[in-house]
Amino acid sequence: MRKESASLNLVIKHSKEIIFTIFVGVIIAIVSTLILDFIYAETGPDETAIVSQTNPQNKSVPQLWSHHKLLEVNADECANKALSILKTLDFQSVVKNERYVYGNLNGNRATIKCAEVANHSFVYTAVAGANVASVEKLRNEIAWKL
Image 1: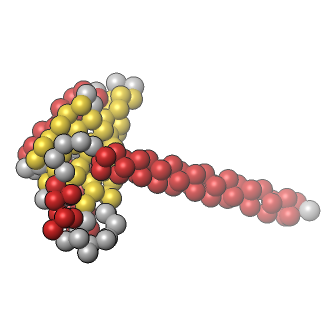
Image 2: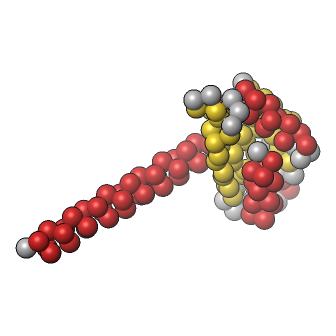
């Protein structure tokens, strides 16, 4: 009886961990989708539209790569650093809207959002575009500079 009880407790514990992991994955997927929708709905110059017009047969789904991190600076400093990073990487049409920064580069769009968390900042970065290699490379370059 004790062995069955211990087994049942182990199954319950692992089930809770699996459900929590699935829940976190769903939340990340929803946030990524919202960010992608926001990226492509923004007004202003959109280099991705120009790229897609040159190849109307290209019906591929855009790639979306993201990254997050906790920084030892406040959110305003984080946003200023984000602005500097995108400009250093030669992004065009770079816009800073309070603690949110975004810009375009060669058919890709990057976003960096800084949120205040106990005198530190949680930064979320997303890069979207058609070419998986360039999207991954840009995401990595931005993440390394944060």
